[in-house]
Image (cartoon, rainbow, N blue to C red):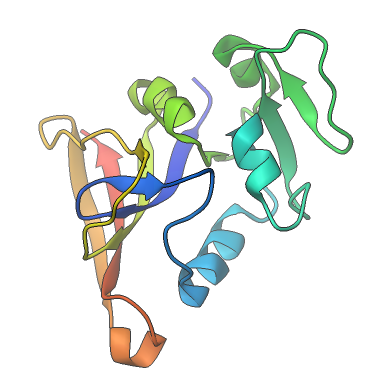
Length: 163
């Protein structure tokens, strides 16, 4: 089985996005995302890809899932199904699932690890992350970040591993 990890920032109410955009801007979280995913394959849906400020993401293999047969996006490897995206993944390193909502739902049963940025606030949204079932997942690391220091919301970094 290929190593599959999910990386996502979620609100207290599991909100992750609205109108194909993020709900917040936390500089430290964006730096963490870049540090963790650089050098690794990243898998995302087409809407997530087009919401990125820089695309394709540098120093990463960008695998984009689309349901449009034959669609090509410059600088990306295209997958037309979950199975095809798994075939494109690297067997020897972590592969990161980075959204959007339907992609997270489809990959959650296949992932071994979750990198969660937990924003300690509810947000209005139209896209949500699935609930984390604590009978399936074990919290192995949690680091609180000081909102005063970060100049933003109260949040923490969490790592969950499949039991």
